[in-house]
Image 1 (cartoon, rainbow, N blue to C red):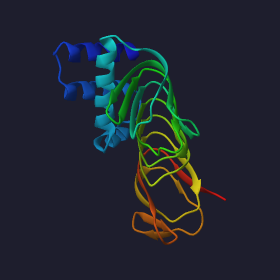
Image 2: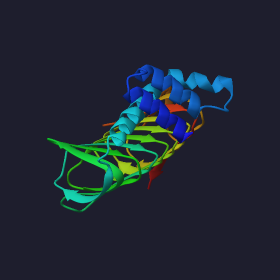
Image 3: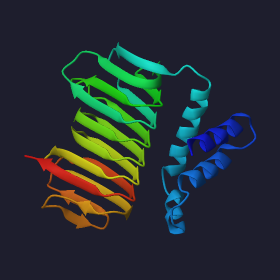
Length: 237
């Protein structure tokens, strides 16, 4: 299957097909053998964007320059990671600099942004005192977060998400994977758009349409778009 995808990417690079054509071909390859009705999920939200990210990363990978990265850099306000066929693990700790370990990766710094594209696992430790905003795209891998962050945005294709963290706002987009969150018991608003999967929440939530509300005061926000996976939220006592 990966060899077929490589040929699709080669055709894209040579200009024989467009990005849109490549999306359709890769979708067909990835979903071969599944029931026809499952294809409807690809019409929603982030899936085309995820495929574009994967194609873009593969295009860059084909140009060379990817390598194992073990390094340390000064703090950044924004971290964006795209992992193709690898896990993403981000933790905040009492350290001064960002520590990075990534397989088959490219790293780029743009002002206050850190960009990482990887064809393997990515492990990052970030300073606890500098609450960063995270954008994490995982194509066939898990995402794991632990610590204290400002804003978290995840897009996961065929992988689970595990979060044990504090945050101001979170956007979770998953396809064919479960999301499990542990956070402190504080007022929270959760906006759900789910198309398949179960929702498990602690007692005390009030439901208003697709919105679930817990407590009163300054709310932290969670937006969930779930295509084929369960969502679970637990409070840490």
